[in-house]
Amino acid sequence: MNQEGIFRAAARQADLVLLSGARLHEILRNNAANFRQTKFGCIDTGIRAANIMCVTFADEQAAFLAGALLSQLHRHGLLPAPRTRAAGDELTLGWLAGEDDPQLKSMLNGFVEGVRLESPGARVINGVAGSYSSPEKGRAKAEELLGLDINALAVLAGRAGLGAVEAAIAQGRPLVGVDKDQQFLAPKLMLTSIVKRADRAVFEIVKATARGAFAGNEIITYDLANGGVDIVSPQVWARHAGVRLPAAIERRLAELRLELTRGGIRLPSLRDRTLCNCR
Image (cartoon, rainbow, N blue to C red):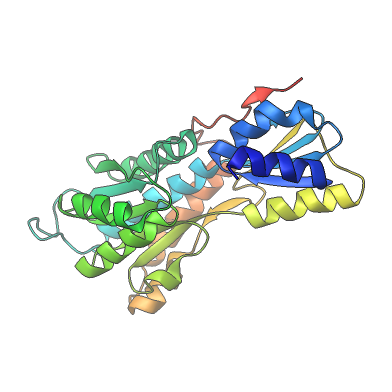
């Protein structure tokens, strides 16, 4: 059974159906009106309809912090120099996405802004594995990026990212993870992870439904201010790596977090916060 068939079967049988992923979002957009008695929880994209409650994420804010952190680590000499460049050379980072999605473009823009705020001459090289499910494709694209002598690699590629992480470990390159704390994949190399609380989003939608407070037509945005997105503290990596993290780095991150939450730093989002208005 294909994804649309699975969606239709679930929509006929369940009171609440939760969906995440670009293809399922499209199916929901096209079919929600056919199942008006079924409630849908949409995670990571906004679709306005009376039977859809959505939670989306300002994850460009967390990506901005991750980029600023990497620039700070480089400034303090805590990122190893690639093979063909000296320790004092300009920062060069890799960004590996699974596919060319609007959400990841938005995060990439935030990441680049954070990097360049702290290191104006830095480069961020964007790569796309072409899959969220193939570790082989992730590994191949990561090896291509690592061959460009990047200082660190941000991996946002689902299961394909597992192959990318393996490639980075083999070459001793530092990493940035995504979605949840991925320290366990490479304790001494995972500098931080860009976290978004999809688990909390699911819980809130289920709770609202159970209490009779399902908020159709509503799009809730999780951001730094409400704790829906953030980065894992670099102290976690520092403890695993046996590194003393300068207090100046944490102070700078705290300043930037405050600017983001107060609106002093505003980041454009390419995410489709409203995918469509369903009738």
